[in-house]
Length: 296
Image (cartoon, rainbow, N blue to C red; front, side, top):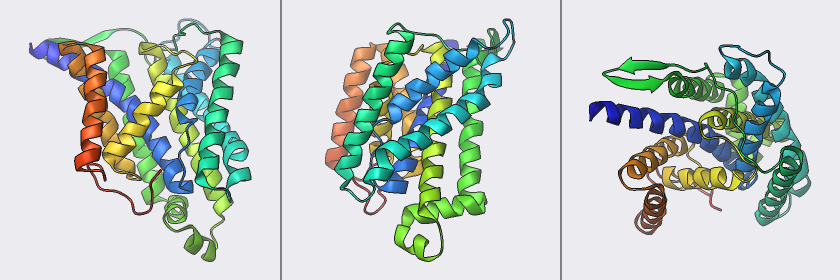
């Protein structure tokens, strides 16, 4: 019983770690521009396919292919985030937020169909972070891949925290997100901060895509699922609350895995959505409050 519980918990934390990276990038864009990036889930999917494509370039038999590719995937998806900002946000930055919603939906669909045409609709498996193998803990066999996923996601989340709270550039990003007009008056270039935020969000999406692509595979239509989980995490965590969204993403994964193991995946999904509806009725600001003025 203890062994099974530990295995389920490791599975849930590995999935939740990837969800947390997805939610972090999603909420960073909300805070930066006050609009929802509906292409964010497709960026996660694209990160998985970028890992699959780049893995072809590596020699066979490497013990840590995913770790070797991680910096490249982060860089590629950071550039994709910048392109997304230039195409879907910058031309519409003075338009109503609904214009940005529609433009990001369009970009996401374009990305989905482009990858379907280029790679086909079939599921693909991404590179493993540290190869195969298991480690025994309290009698439970835990995979190296699960533990590495949790560790890598933790390092990336810590890096984001350090960037936002321990660097001058991070303070500029937060200032521009909290009060754009005051930040502009203080000499902060909002074009740079918005571009950097989109790049950071794209990199986080790419990291999540790489982590998910090995154990859960990746298909061109996965973006909608990732987008929905990120949106739910933001609603549960509190609109605009960065770490609230990350914690909510972990909770969502733990809930899904435990209920799916006890009953079924369909029941887990149904109960999750019912729980979100109940939360919206009784505590619409989410579990950790709500950032003022950030609502979609």
